Image 1: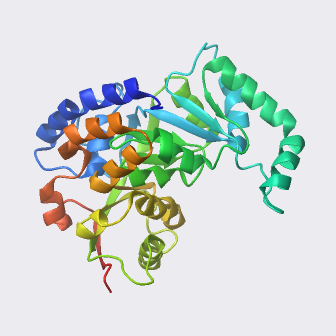
Image 2: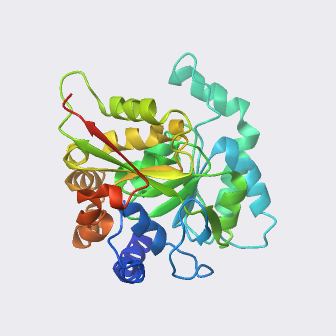
Length: 318
């Protein structure tokens, strides 16, 4: 089953024209992060060049994801909006309140019993407002999003710091607080300071005892715990293409540990294979048809110092 196919078709139908208009306005090539950001400007933000790290901009994310611990207050607030349905596709995932101690067979029933009032409330209010509800035991929020909802070139927010996991499938996915989620679910513009751009060029190929997690640990060693603050980290290069989609997701997920706004990779064959492996052949075909718009322009990757605020190069072979 493909979720939100009509939404994805709409985004892909409009994205090329929006990117072309932004590129014409800027008068230069664009990184992937810029393509996604400028193609998701809210109508209250005019198409103009915004200064990275300085200008506050209104965006219109495609979807919202919430975990059970943070969804409670967000949905209590949304309940006061007077709306009959959320303005954008939204989901609730019951995973954070489950205590992992003795194994699923014992832990899951105990956690469901302990949090019954919370889960009943989340299920009821989700049904009331057309929000997708993933019950306890259905899976971890970030994995469910990657397997079912994430799509290249999209923009989403989630009430968890590791929401950037979806960047492994070419999204700009940003962790936020519950109040931000309420704004987007209510159809209001979402404000964000235009992020700076950090480019990470990956060369070579992982081998031996190295894994994708080692890549982000290396990046974290370079940038430290706050070196990515206020920036989007965009990975590119032949080394990036050699990583699996889930490997990319691991790297983006842990971008939260360097304070990054989010992290992302350009669309490639690995992402196409992952979409097909998870039953989203139609999404893969749509992405293939506009593949050039779902990654940064070649000029940005050939001369990254001209287009990124900071560039890091890592050889995966060493």
